[in-house]
Image 1 (cartoon, helix red, strand yellow):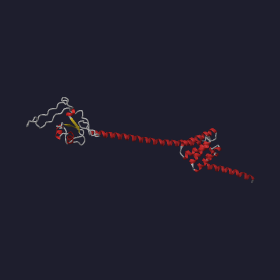
Image 2: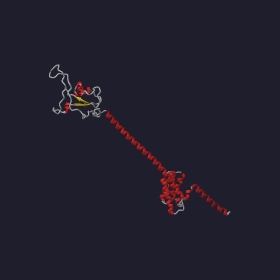
Image 3: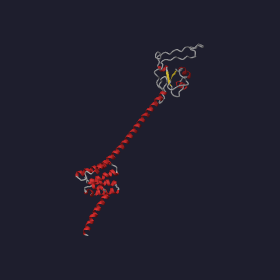
Image 4: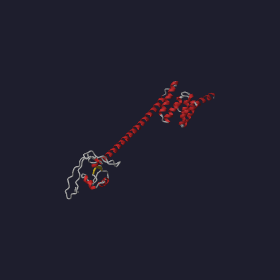
Length: 283
C-alpha cells in the first residue's frame, strides 16, 4: 500500500505534464529558458494570445522584450503572430531570426531547429508573392498613365489642326490675309496689291460740253510724283463676315455704283471674308 501511494503522484504528474503540452502547444519546446516564460509581461502576452486578443498580445510581448532583450520565447511567439494573424512577413522574419541568434549565442540545444528556418522560408515566399502582385499593379498603373498622356497629346493636336483648318478656310483665294475676328479690325493689305489704278469712265461731260463721247480712262500718275501719300489715292478695305457693298459704301461715304465701278473684278452679290475692296475717292 505504501508503494502504491508513492507511485500515484508520479503518474499524475506525468499526465499533467502531457496535458499541459497539449493545451499550450509544441512551441513550448523552443523556450528552453524557463525564466523567460515566468516573466509577468510574457505570461500576460501568452494569455492574450490564447484569448484571441492579438493586439494586446503583441504589446505585452514587446514589453517582455524591453524587460529582457534576450527573451527568445517572446521573439518566437511574435514571429508567429505577425506571420499568421497580421500577415506582416517582414516583422515575422525579423523576430524568427532574432530568436535564432539569441539561442545560438546561448548555445541552446534547439538553436539549429529546422522549424525556425521553415518559418523564415514561409515568410520569404509570402513576401515574394506580395512583391509580384504589387509590381503587376504598378506596371498596370504605368501603362494607364502612358495612355492618358498620349490621349491628351492627340486631343491637343486635333484642336490645333481644327484651328488651322478654320483659318485656311477664311483666307482669300488670292492670298489676302483674313481679318482679325477677335478685334473686328481689318488686316493689312497684301504685298501684291497694285500701286496704280485706272480712272473708270464716266458718262458726264467735261468742261461744260454736251453730247461729247466719253473719254478713255486716263491712268493715274504715281502718288509719289503728285506729292500725295498712297493712302490718299488707293484706299482699301478687307471684307469681314456679313459685310456687303452697301455697308462698305456707307462706312466710307461713297455710293454703291462708285464702289462697284472701282471693283469690277468682284461679285457684289458674293463677297467673301478676306477679299480686298478698293475704296474710290469721294466726289
